[in-house]
Length: 294
Image 1: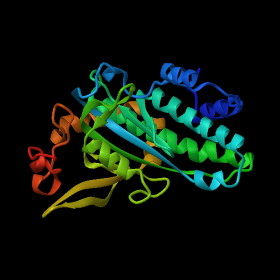
Image 2: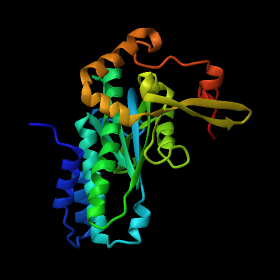
Image 3: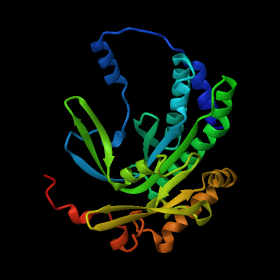
């Protein structure tokens, strides 16, 4: 039996979603949420507040655009169906490629790919394939469905980066969450926003770009910022997700092999971290790490 398509995920979720108005005591609602919440990464659920552990991850942000306008046009019941169907399809797609949903970001999803038993090239391939799968699914499957129910189309953009992260649990009391903290997370989140990435684009940082064959990426404007008297920058690239997805459909084995060959070519260190260019222009503000925050 063939793997489900994004259309299958979305249409099944849309058809099964029915709004039902209920009223529950606050205590019962909190208990229910506590039992069903499953965001984060299962490998790091053991962490207590304040504890950390190092890891590598591909951090993935999907930004959904166009919902604000729909909120003023359509009734809440239809909006619930649309949001739930798209969220469900996105979660199913991310899980299909071995990813973990870390949080829902209002108009999007944050996810991570990779764990301690996954090779870096496999992690990157999974994230790239998921991005292509999701974006094609929204464009080709979700928007025609929205048109059928009288709704305007939505748009999506993706930001991704790969590298070292520090997993930790943040929060207080029983309101906590496991999250990956690093410049990788910060950059991927920035790249998914309107300021940095247009709709229907996927933008990636230089670490992830090191894994992408040249014909599937385009150099973009650098991410640059000023901190005091020092300047910092990161090379950015547009990921050609349509071409990548088409090539994966034709020959996934060959594409997987090509990613592995990039590791063997000397451009990637054994641990999977991209070799950094001149630290004077690339590195993040590590010179401040030993200075007191307060």
